[in-house]
Length: 353
Image 1 (cartoon, helix red, strand yellow):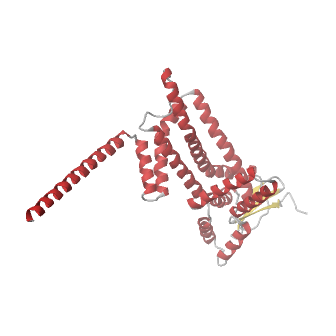
Image 2 (image 1 turned 45 degrees about the vertical axis):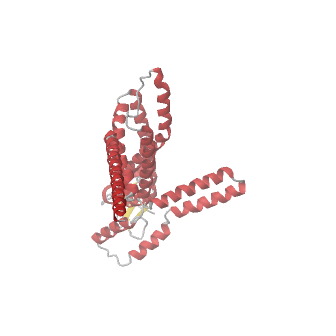
Image 3 (image 1 turned 90 degrees about the horizontal axis):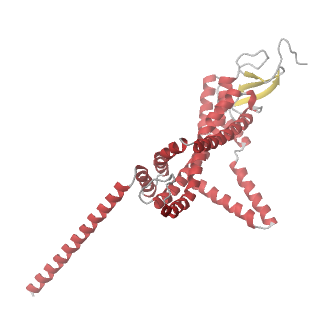
């Protein structure tokens, strides 16, 4: 009996040792395989993998966004240089960013008009300042959207290269000879979408979940408009209008909120400046904060402290023509912290009747 137990124990130990050796062999083989794949990846692919792991394991969308932006720059900057050194590529890049610049100039002009209540042509420096504020997010957003759109066509491009390869084509390839280009394209598409969603959430001061919900609801509303009957389409339009109205900041509610916040504000200039800065911080969204900065720039830098026209004490003026001026005065009860008012020019040579 004792001998039988010893034999069973010996066999169990032998099987356990064989399993441990097998697991160790598979572990070593898997580690070597992963190591070989890691060293076959280029720098951009390694960063894509790190960004994907940070999104899955750490659930940090902003860390994923930062790593992905670095990877996109590393991967596409040589291709950008290659495209720039060709005549057609240089023309394409210039046209692309000229279109963006035109949209930014028009948008900045509308924002200056919204803040000052007069044409942006009367506030040239403020218009330039607004353009500088709006150019980075527009350029980055359009570039990321273009890269995201290119990912949809990249698999077809790879298939086309494979089809013309037997014919000995020596065309310029805009994809690197990297490890698993199709899988890289899929991962890049997912990460570029994450970057775009996080950029929208930063600009609108919303959570990424709310941005995704807005995109889904907008898509569903568009589908309803495309397929529904006239009555259902009208209902969908009304629902979409309500959603847009909810997203547009309510100036009256902002004014009442600012009135409650500014009951005990002193008349001292330093206190007004600190209160304006606090209100800018409390404002949600990049574009809404930029309107505060535009109003502050117009008052602090472009407006004149001294004018030939009569104006209120503590205010500044910008001349529109020989007979009208814009009087700018700090007023925390106004939407952007300053009161822009067009008044008649009353001077030594011009008397208001």
